[in-house]
Amino acid sequence: MQKLKEELQKAVRQMSDFEKLKNQIEITITSEGLRIELLETESGTFFDSGSPKPSRRGRELLAMLAGELGKLPNKVSIEGHTDSKPYAGVRDYGNWELSADRANAARRLMQEEGLGQDQVSQIRGFADQSLRKKDNPLDPSNRRITLIVQYIVKDADEDSQKPAPSTEHEKPAAAKTEGE
Image (tube, rainbow, N blue to C red; front, side, top):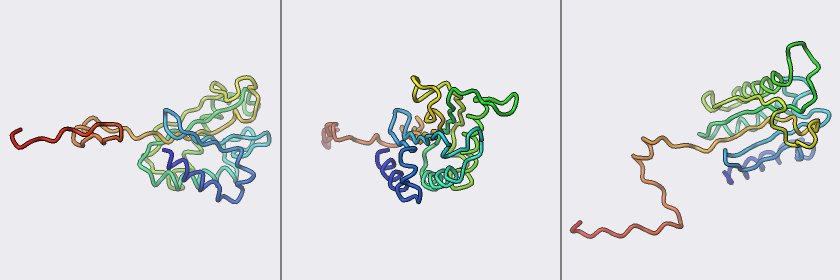
């Protein structure tokens, strides 16, 4: 995951708007895998305020990420998050719908741009239930799209057919003699 993180950071740095976007993109390694967070600003960076459609910058970044992630065998989860400000748009449509619709819009665009059809394992809309800044629920960075590049999990059948990889810390197995 560290190598993938470095490769994605390098690709992001090559984007034309990198200087404007560098504080809005966070890439970290977590227990789930590689977490890529696209954080909004007050004026909206990746999505226009209240809209489930990606902005020009959002489309450009998601397309670039799709091209890179599409080369991998890893599954990807896509999450949408909002801040705690109630959605003031259409009746019967709120932060739950907006967060899920943004995650799904990101999925559609990324699959059009190179992410494999079978790579997305889940789409999750969190509304304002998983705030980055709990002490400031209206902070714009609480509005975000999160991509999680999951670790590859081997099947039990695959594991039994392949020898386990050795690590530097393991002692080598004792050599067998002819009589064994």
